[in-house]
Image (cartoon, rainbow, N blue to C red; front, top):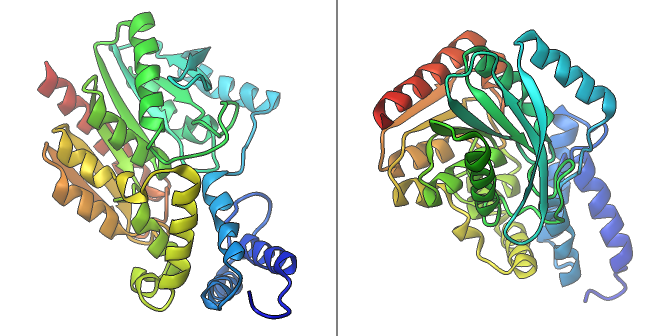
Length: 340
């Protein structure tokens, strides 16, 4: 321990700076140059010979996402959105293998084509963030499943593992969906964390026939270098700020009990051949395009890579809405034909 250093004060300072830097996503966060400066200060602090306990500050930000519960008025807004497509919603509750209760919705298209799409949201979000995708899928005849991931929204669980456990949650969801609905085909579509989970889920469950993944990371370990590199360059995270990244990796692995390298969409697409459409925004600084490119190279099945100019993280549809919908529907249509 550094002589005279107050560990409690250190925790409070670093935690406050981390919130400013955008490590948590609740409430208002500063943006632009101030946010980048804050990130720099946070990571510079970690590179100092601080007490080892300070390294444990960041694991909670990673493992315990902000939980966004769903208010009654938000459910009403969702129902109005579904009503525009004449779709019907019902609650869908599934118990995972470890007993965690997963909550979400099944939404049936007015004119169903017999296929279902699992919609998987990103970190610190919930099922509501996937409504914009559900709308055009429902209008095209696809029914959808919209679940809150474990440790998110109304679902149980306290730790997010980014696919290590969630892939088995998806298998339980598919079990329940298959028993109740007897779908012709099951596809998955996710963004960010949800994209990574979708790819890992398809690797262990062939009933998930094809996956669309926007903003998926290649493996969880690599993400730490991006964040340690201030979301500007992984090179910074692997060199100057490497001590901060490795400290965070070590502390996180200690808490979860598995290697972050094992949480790997890149390895998943190599392990099983299935169609994938990978989407990455060219202005995505959270999960840069090199992640999608690495997954694309590793994929052993039919594959497409769409790099979207000007799009930021999870903003491909917002940036190019018509092309986004066209590519998604064309991809699922081809997947239908290929599996028949």
